[in-house]
Image (cartoon, rainbow, N blue to C red; front, top):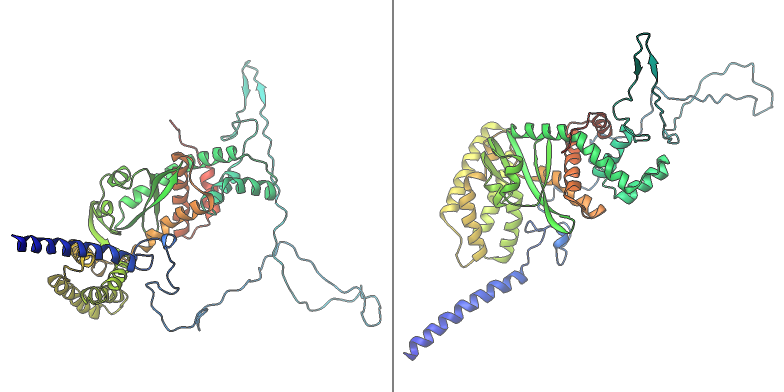
Length: 444
């Protein structure tokens, strides 16, 4: 009996020892922004420079040989021309007024004139007809108060808020310093509410067009709203960006915006379970997310070969997608799929706990790893969605949290329009000015 108790005790101690080693390994090989999806701001000890997934090309930094240069060009239609004609000889002092000037050199200066607000006064009149009826003219649409701000100011506030990410205090200061317009922070809030209301039809149109797109990227990020953790979601294509605010990171946020999912599209996303569960014809998992995680796993389990082989496979697949030789690409694509099958048949050692967990996840994700090799225009990464949602973090770092859910949704609407405008090569401020002239939507 004593021997059995000792054997049982040894097994317990071995199990406890394995658990302690697993816990200790987390501190010996901590996750950071280089080997996982943890943002750089959460790194405990910042990793060394040049530790990204990008590999050295051997080229020197800076402009490369053969690149197209850019310089400030002269305009062919200057607004003002100043002729500098000599009036007297700088040798003998005689007058040159009657001498014809010949030849000239030209230089130009580009500058901005002093900015001045334009005040427009509307006056309505009445006229009495011979029939006895008095007809009075109405004020134009938007001229609803004794004094109000025009569409250009409304567009400019939206631009400062969602494109340049200015806080309200700095917007107030800029309007006063640059345009000599004294507007309160409360007035800025009202203008943004009004502008977001005008932008709503365009915002809804973006959502409708994305819902029928063939390739859609998606991502989400956390944000503070009145002290609480909320979320911004994005769904985007190469020409459209739709951003939405939600108080949840779960599937309810997706269903609220796209209740039918994307039955005809390929959805490019990371490994978040709500994204993985989204209805779509095909899925594409973001490979750089997996590569960063493999960096961590290969550092932690240095002796394992499975993780290194899987990482090499992903890199080869990404490089293959850039190959323009269609015939060679088809052959290599078959090879990639076969290599994946062999790796799935030979799992890593179960003692490498996190690596084995990663392997099981790849078994589930297997058919979503290389969609980009079979369907045109599907990327291997989710970088475009990350770029579309990154502006939310920039806004929060500069301006702080959103005070209300309505303010968060206003930003989502305006930023969606701005990002879509940028993707289509349009001037952002001009596009916002057109929206500011649109008829506002009725609000409940």
